[in-house]
Image (cartoon, rainbow, N blue to C red; front, side, top):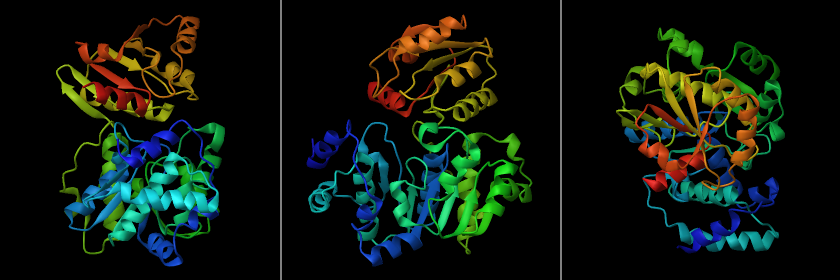
Length: 384
């Protein structure tokens, strides 16, 4: 185990304290200006990692250099920082620990890796830093960049204990990732929220909406999958940012599948793993599954992280009695919701289920989906 890995492991079960002004002081004013001008920040409820990685792969195919910072990882923390550059992770450790001591600061896991990602970008003089926010935007660590280019993928309810229940409030939290947005690119956002963006937020210079963009291309956004929406959102962003490239240039570039996001691991029977963990994500996942598989019965293997509103997700799942529920047994992944609490609710609504190991998904002979948490998907990947 490397020194940095040991350092991060100590932080994995602890809450770091953070002060955004202190974290900002890790960088010089010139560094912050470079980050502000060259970062594409991604916020939203779902689709951030997929869209960020799509932008990175498109830029790489165009021979432009970039680094993408995403979270969480599935198996290895190094998944959070993707670039063609060779990163010597341990060389950053001394500076980060010195920074903590000097400022009497205990950085969190996310904050430490974010600083490493930023410094790697700066040290290698890359063209673009593609930066996914953690939770929200207004108080998120990545907001220290104050990026001039921001992508909002989607807005729905998640992390309501921090962001609130109202979509308008969730939007406010996300969109304030920066107070000086020159270009805002929005994914599949409702007309109501788009009206709020266009009328209530004066710190945005120019807004480009995916629905309108696709309409010009004669593509109906309601007839494409979530994976395709994330692809088109990345294409739109770069089409409108890079003057020398067009939609036709960008759409021809094939993109790899993003791990743990509608990842097809087997075709016969069809098996998909996806970290969908909120209502919108699960709805999109199951809808997209049925786009490519017209199977009557689907086996759902489900595990939730503590704090998630599993009731609203289960209420959606059980509307279709052809969805057979398998609950992943306790102690399978980090901060897993106890199965007994989920089972208690299913018993209450008289819904059949089984409690199974993650190996049952591997052995299953029917069309099936593993879902509910990216941490669950990560444990599955360790098993295979």
